[in-house]
Image 1: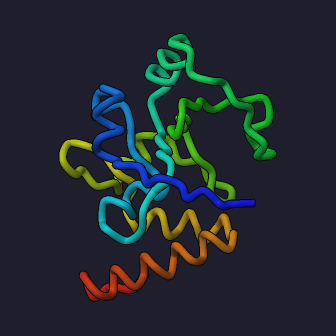
Image 2 (image 1 turned 180 degrees about the horizontal axis):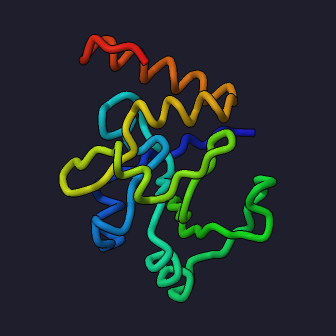
Length: 149
């Protein structure tokens, strides 16, 4: 079977197409890694306000059930390579839009999760791909900011 390579997502282009108010969302996941040149992103994960979530749901975004034990009965939205949620979990903590933006970064009028927040979340997720991403982010921070998380 032939493997078809995924096409990287242009984060800013995809966000502009959505035409969301910058106050109502924050890009999470690999989006900040792509913007910083750490690695490509192949999807776009976004935490949005409940108001924006409801609007997107009524506009026909695909409703997907959560499988996380603490989120059974709740949903997230998907449209193409874009996934919307109203919060994310890490360990026993929930991170909503406001909490993420407190430590987030505003780049070209788009809010992004900070690398330090993303490292913390990925450590709690603990999947092999997360540890690979953590290594890449820590190398980036050491190289450009002489910081260690």
